[in-house]
Image 1 (spheres, rainbow, N blue to C red):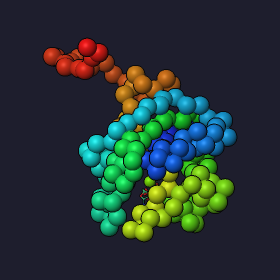
Image 2 (cartoon, rainbow, N blue to C red):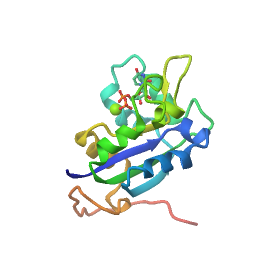
Image 3 (cartoon, rainbow, N blue to C red):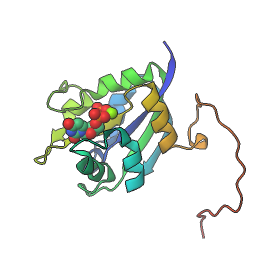
Length: 168
Ligand code: UDP
Ligand code: MG
């Protein structure tokens, strides 16, 4: 079995329903390690990039609104990287099926997800589906410095005239 990393997002419905603690507890059953974590106010650009593979789906626009928090009072998500043996499959299993009504009721999505009247699956959590998605998604949501164990190669790049926000 390979050491893998996988991207987890606690979606805006999970934050609004105060499920962060419960979801992290469930994920700890996997015995994987958290290698990175941050709270992110999701821009449209990031949302569309994250779900780029679904851009032709009829639910795409609604999905973008959902992940940006437009449908909830919490306009943010919690992003994490889980690290360890077989991480991708272990996390997907505990998440459950995409459709919360079909998901095992003991899974995270089965326990906490719902289908809205407009038909979107508010399933509380995202988890990378395969190694290719995991690598793409982790690199989209995190900089190398933010991840404590690194399984993907890094490089040093030189920047000219960088502006950054600092404490005043
Ligand atoms: N989704 C939805 N309706 C569908 C399929 C997907 O609302 O028929 C939403 C759901 O929130 C899901 C996300 O779109 O988690 C991404 O879809 P994907 O097929 O990648 O499922 P996942 O990998 O999240 O299980
Ligand atoms: Mg997916």
